[in-house]
Length: 205
Image (cartoon, rainbow, N blue to C red; front, side, top):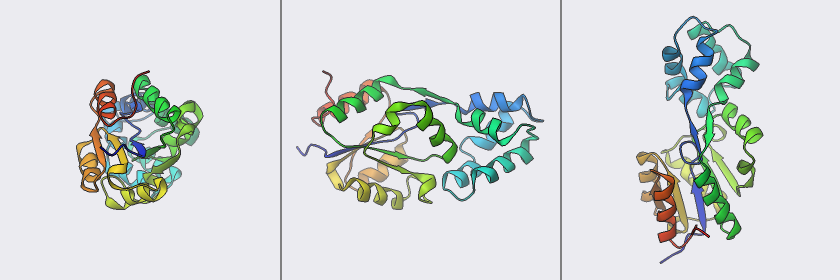
């Protein structure tokens, strides 16, 4: 069995849980529309896709949300509310730390945006310990588009079965599997830890 030479982690729902309802409720308190309507603007919306592909700037994203919602706060206040939606998934962070201790390179591979990453970098020290990062807004593509997977292979210096990939979205995992990656659909920390153990990595101490 080929033991992976690199482990690639999705970020949201794998290492950090997130809930845009938190942001929507805060923003609604200073807006003309409901929290449910605001969540529609910022969670898996066409507007968010444009932002997470790097097609619009932070300021442009803010202006579009402001116009649609009547939000009365500043860009700075909006940025803090929008990005403070994460909760660490500690067993997965510990898994990443075991891989690093074992000398296995680890990488972040995420559909995300500048505001989220700025907040995560400032708030969660584990984020700075990866060997490389492929985040959608820096490349102009989003998973499961193949161009973004090519970026991972180029940065990691691995292809095919030498890459182990964890993601919570089936379409993203399937795209990795088509490239020969050892793709693990993340459903729970226990399931992912067990899957990596079967590949010969990430064992509990």
